[in-house]
Image (cartoon, rainbow, N blue to C red; front, side):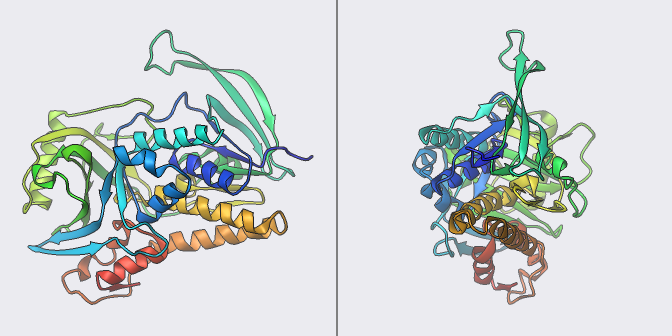
Length: 407
C-alpha cells in the first residue's frame, strides 16, 4: 500500500511539535495527534539549552517565544563560599544563550508555528492500535468525544466517536513517559535507576531580578540544585528531596489546566530548603506555584524498529534540573529529519537505525561520570554536574571543560 502521509507524530507536547516542524522543514508531510483536548496549561518553567534555541530559530518559533522567555547567558556555580561562572557563548552548534520559559508558553508558540506552516494538531485523537511490522505501519486512531457538562475545566466522560486508519511511512512516538507507542512496541519499561523526587517552586527573589544566569547550588548534602531566572522577577528553584509527606508528591502527568499552589506546607518546605542550600542568597519575597514529582532515570529497552521510533520522554527519562529529556528530544528530532532528508528514500531503514544508535549513545554519555576534574572545589560534584548543565553532546563536553572537568 502506498501512503500519502509521510509521518504520523503521536503526542503534541514540545518534542512532538518540534519533530513535526523539523520534519516538515525537511520536506515531509506530517500529521500530529494527541488524546488531550488541548495543549498543557500547567505553568511550570523549562530550561532551553543554547542548541535548542538555535533549533527554535531555524523552525521560525524563536521570535514568537522571546516575549515570554528569559535569556540565560551563563551558569554560575555556587557553594561553600565560592563561585565559578561558565559562559554559554560559543558552544558547538548552539546559539549564544539559552532560555527559561513556562512550558505552557513554549507549547503555545510551537502550536502557533505549526498552524502557520499549515499543520493543525488533531486534539482528542488517541492511538488505539499500531501494527509496527506492517509496510507501511498501520495506525488505528480513536476520535474522541468528551462530555464536559458545561464545565470548561472538566475533561468529562470520554467516548469513541469514530475510528480511522492511517498508513504513514513513519510513526514517531513523542507521547511522554507513559508512551502508548512504546507499549505497542513492547519497550515501555525504562531500564534505569530508581526514581528520584524533586520539589519545584516558582518564587520572587529580589536579589535575582533581571538575572541572566542559571545558578547551580552545590550543597553540603552532596547534591546539586538549580535556580533558573524567569521574566518579571520570578525564578524557578528545583531541589532534589527525600521523605516528603504522602500526598505531596503528585503523578508526573501532563496537566491540562493552570494550577498555582502556595500552601503553607509547601512554603515551609521551601523556606527550609532555601536556608539549608542557599544560605548565601537573600530569601524570596513570595512563593507562587509549587509542586513535587518523582522522575525515573533511564532508557526504554529500545528506541524503536523499522518505521516506528520514539523521541523525548518516550525514549529516555532524566531529572528535571536542566530539562535534558525535552532538550535531547528537540535535538534528536532535528537529527531524525536530517537523516531522512539525506537518505532521500534510498537506504531509509539504515539511516533510521544509524540515527537511533547515535542518539542513544549520546544519551548514555549523560550518565557517564567525568574522568577527572582539575578543580578540587568541584571534584565532589563532577559526576552530578552533567545532569544539571544546560547542554548535551559536544556542547556539554565543552561546558564541562570550561569548568575544568574532562569526560
